[in-house]
Image (cartoon, rainbow, N blue to C red; front, side):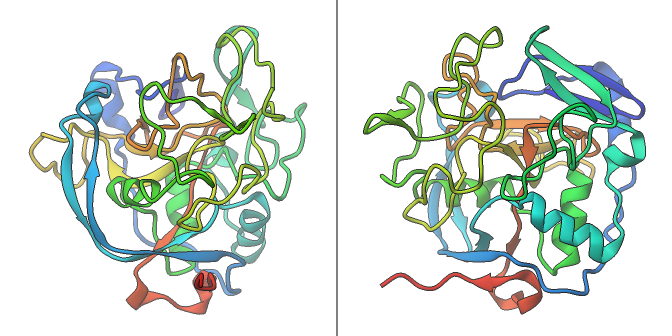
Length: 318
């Protein structure tokens, strides 16, 4: 996980946690206005209806920051069927002229398996997530190297927003795989002779055997659609949420939280024996300006605020 603090980057091995660096990380809670670009053209995206209801958040058997488990009353939402793709983000940039944090800083975080850690690579951005010498991002893959601030600006440009981490977990618990499975501690990532999510295979970080067919990101939906109608809620890329990172049993924080935003869902760097970020309750976190090659996002809209600018509604299942 990488945290960008101003012009400095602090890095650590991938996992469900982040890196707290004394008082320095407080600098990451810099001003984040709610203005920003407004897209003129409607978004080419499909939104799935997520029903409201009572749902368990967290797991008392999981790592400390996923405890204590509790019951949350979720409201109905419309959620992007897939993470935002490279093609969707490109149209946004062409429409609005938006420049990402990685483009403005000139660097972004890239995982280097040769050293088993993260590097700040010049020229890495959403177009070339591993840097100028790496491959161009494929249109049907999740967009990465976008900061929380970039993701927030994108969603708001279409009259949408990022989901809270509780809203995200509600959606994940409706079923992450075609079998309706919600991954828990110790669960197998294989079913029916195939992988159920895009995660790391092999001893992390020394060797990725790519048994699932993908070294980094996969096309959205490559591992099937869950009963909810959503895809990629486990593995592929971590997803930014609107929530500040804090313990579940902490008093409600001030608006600035503790300087980091929560990510959910795990990524292609999650080794089942080390990270297990693909579990429905797993949490990661980083500063809002951090851009990483394994983090993307998806948007949500309240049903009462939905317009065609946000996308189109998925057809109801019969």
